[in-house]
Length: 385
Image (tube, rainbow, N blue to C red; front, side, top):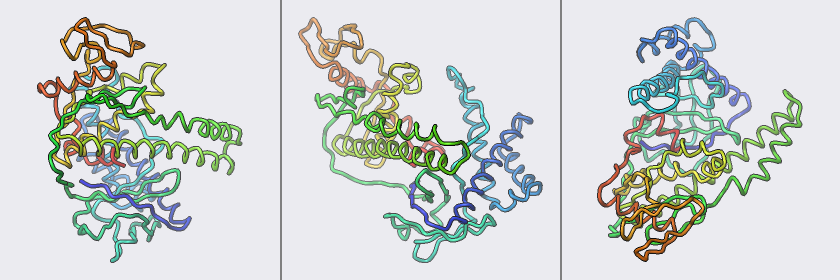
C-alpha cells in the first residue's frame, strides 16, 4: 500500500466545508465509542449500522458521504480492537481504553464521494459538505495508477494548510546489487547511532535547535486574549514551528534508513521499548527528539522494499557484555568506554553495536515485527504520513 500526498488549494468556503466534514467524522467516531460503551458486545457491523441511524437523526451527519461515515466508525472499531488485543496479550500498564476524540484532523473517503479530473491535477468531492473541486499541488504523478487502485482518499488539516492523501493498492519493490555487508546499530543520545564498524552518526537534535523559536512562539500565544484573532494566528505560528521539527525528523529518518538498507544486506538493531524509556523524566525530551521509533519503522519498510533482512535484537546487556570474550563488565551510564580484562578496549556504543550484530546473526531476536504489510491500513497511513 502506497500513500501519495498532495497539498490542496481552494477557497475559504471550501476550507470551511473540509472543517465541517472533519467535525462530523469526529462526532460519528465518538458516537460509535459511546454506543460500544453502552453495548459492550457490539461488533464492527453494529457500529457501521449506527452510521445510518445517526444520518437519520442529525442533518449534518446526513450531508457527509455514507462511506465516509463508515470510515469514521471503523476508526472507532480500530481503537476498540486495539484495546481488546492489549487485554488478551496482558500488556503491562494501561491497556489503551478507547477515549473520545477532541481534536480530529482528517476525514476519510472510500470508493465514493470523490472524483479525479482527467489530468489528475484536481479532485472533486461530491457530498453535500460544500467542498467541491480542489486543486492538487505535488510532484507525484497519479496518472501512473489507474483509479481502481486508489482505495481511499483522506483530507488532512495541518498547521500550514490542507492535504489530500491517496491510499494506492500497489507494492513497492526495488532491486539493488547485494553488498555482502552485515551491520549492527546501537542508537543513543550522544550519537544518533553507532554501527559495528565504529562509525558514529551525529544526533541532529532538531527540537533542541528550534527550541528558542518554539518557546518564543509559546510566549506570544500565552499573551494573546483567548478567542481573539491574534490568538488564533499565534496558535497557527506555533503549530507551523512544531510541524517543521516533525518534518525534519521524518526527513532525517527516511534518508538515513534508506542509506543503511541499500549499503548492507543484513541490519541488526535494538528492540527498544521507547514508551518505557520516555518515563525517565530527565531523558524523555532527548529520547523523543531522537525519534528512534520512526527510524526503526523506516528501516523495516525499506528492508521490505529492497528485499534486505532486518533483525530486532533484545537490548539486554548489549552494553555490559564484552564483544571479544563475552564476559559481563558492569558499568554506569556515565562510563562511555568499555574496558575488559581480556584486553578489549572500545567505545561503549561500538561494543554494544558489535554485540547486537553477533546476536542478530545467531538468529537471536525476531525479524520484521513492525513490517508494514502486517499493519492495518489506517495505522500504516498514520506512520507514513
